[in-house]
Amino acid sequence: MLILLPPSEAKTRPTADGADRLDLETLGLPELTAARSTVLRAAQRTAVGADGAAKLGVPDSSPELLDRMARIESEPTAEALSVYSGVLYEQLRKDHSPAEDRRVLVQSALFGLVDAGADRIPAYRLSAGSTLSRLGKAGSWWAPRLKPLVSELHREQAEGDSPLVIDCRSGSYRSMMAMRSGQGVRVLEVSPVQERSGVRKVISHDAKRYRGLVTRALLAAERTPTSADELVDVVRSTFDTHLQVELDGDRLVVVDRVG
Image (cartoon, rainbow, N blue to C red; front, side, top):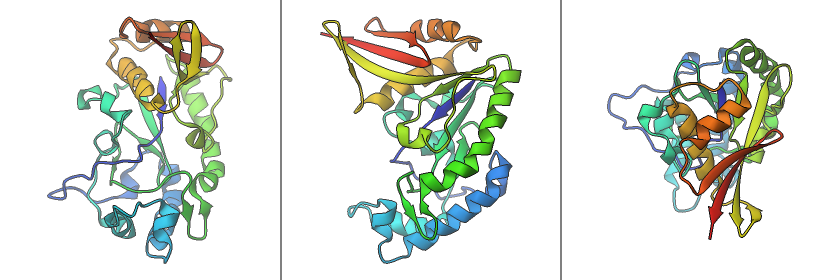
């Protein structure tokens, strides 16, 4: 089973003492190494430019982020799941590291894709909407370079025991690497809704929390589901009574019943 996650805007900077520095050669998906190097250099150029803060989305309250991006290769690294933070990743404890039959990839504007179970990364500041020196929008630049991976990931999932892809990404990151059902693979987009008095409303503000709950349920499950129906049963068994999950085509709908 493959789980696709968005990155978090906020990140926890690893402790500097004794930490390894970034080494692109050690990251998974080595076919992306050259592209990662290109984006890394562009991010550094952008950070030292006159309008670097605006292009990288660095808030006025955190000017140190700009300096850290300028020397990102010297920043300490740690396991990806301990660097990404925020409401989605708060649902994932360290003991929820992916099992061998469950792969978690995080879409990243800096690295393209990050293997949450193996890669060590620094706390970086770059989003899909960031504008990079000489490259343009990060998400748009990555899209054609990630497209060849889609066929590879589809093939790997189709040949495995669990031909499922659980897509927890937001729209801007889904557009970086679109994945759809087909070729023996079922791609399910996690879509949280709130239901009150029988009326449903799409959840946008807190959607990441629900996607984190789904990810936690799948990583903590004793068995890896091999079909969409089995996946629904696995997730449903971990939810509280006010949370339900159901299938709507290729949407995995999480229903929060309130009131």
